[in-house]
Amino acid sequence: MGRLPSGFEEFEEFVDYWGVDTSDARWTRRAAAGYDEILRFYDALTPRMEEATAYVERYPLHEMPADAACLFRLLLALMQAAIAVELHQASRVPHSPFPHALKIGAGQQPYS
Image (tube, rainbow, N blue to C red; front, side, top):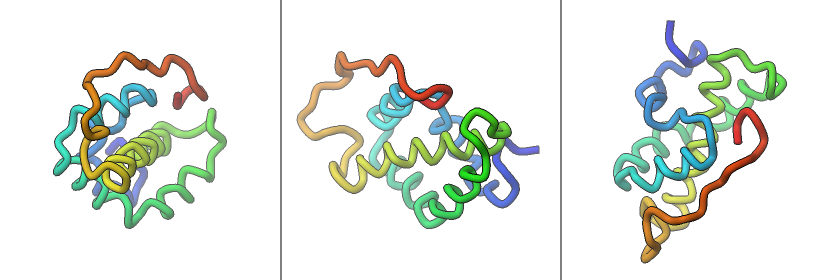
């Protein structure tokens, strides 16, 4: 059995890298990834973003089954990828230091 809901198995290859638990971890993954890899992730998920969002919205945040929560984490990572693709056309803000000193320490649990 896969980690994603039935019908979303095509995204399984992205779970290990992009399916992390926190906003800070998602930002770090985006900043460390090559732009081509970010674009591949973005291009794969974007066409099904609305369908995936509708799927996870069927569940209350704290009552999502594990497969829906995994899909939700990929959607959250997609928002990080969208920043790179739609705003920066790069993994990080151009001409910014990496790694930076800002660490996001708290947020809406369990998906901070």
